[in-house]
Image (cartoon, rainbow, N blue to C red):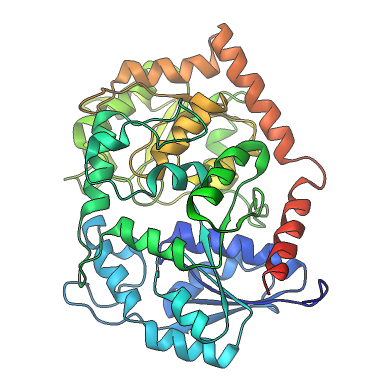
Length: 451
């Protein structure tokens, strides 16, 4: 196909907001270059994503109805609507959309369909003479480490053979968790989740990542050799700066403090801590003596964050601390000049948002790829610090939280200086003139060469 020919692409990501927005950020980059995007998603969810669609003339939302599945509440559209144990029911519901997806593809006749969890899509696309791309919202390092069908937890403690870095490994409790998730049979089938993902990779025509060679070149090459598929790197795919302003309440509160002096702590839309770990986290923020703003889900068993806070916590910290249980404009908060540190669960999207800002990174991964992301950032790239936790039980302490934060915000130790210097270099790279554009252009060229 001639390089100047414009592509027609269908997107059908996993129905979680982090996946939907990541696919939409890529859609914006492609539409910016004149390519046409058809984005499949449930009807009501479209309204949540409208604000992120920067090219509505080229990015068209295609509505789909999520089928009824026994045990899945009526009206469920995304993972935000159900607790984690029901995610397998939502994946099954997506599997049941196969006839509708076939009809959409037959009508649109795209060049490509991008997907992640729907492992049946490549075979369907192939029958319709459409190329498929497994677009991973997780890092090449995570795919290389986690995409293996090992049945025993101990196998996941160490990286697979020929993995680029021995520094990336899992604690015993993390390996047990990965093994449990990988080996759990999915609702409505005999397939394990890891089998779903390996099949998705094996059946696709190419695998795409939101990453760059400067950060993960060796891991991308490892994935290419392991899965024997073209690996396409789209670059950092940074979201455009929001056109809206930060909520006045938070803008006013943050502006009370000195530049780069506030800790911002957020763990995404799904993570919920145990009550005792919630206490250790907020008490750790308090122990630092540094102003903090924590946007957290209530811990397990609590209805609100307020009721879950330790006795006297609100009164002691009313002048310098906020713990808020609602949604916040994370991207705008991270870019606020008074924010100096981001305590994060290590979702790849959250890390991407943070990398282009000047805040230091403190890592508290919870599950899955977050664990590998944390080791990549803290141990391999040395641009962040991870909070220490128990090898066997995975528990962290308030002192561990405070120590990690102080290392990158207050201490002038050699380690702290090294991390901050590396962090600044990475930010400069991400923001270098033409850096991202060259990756997206190469990504498009690679797609065209597959046709």
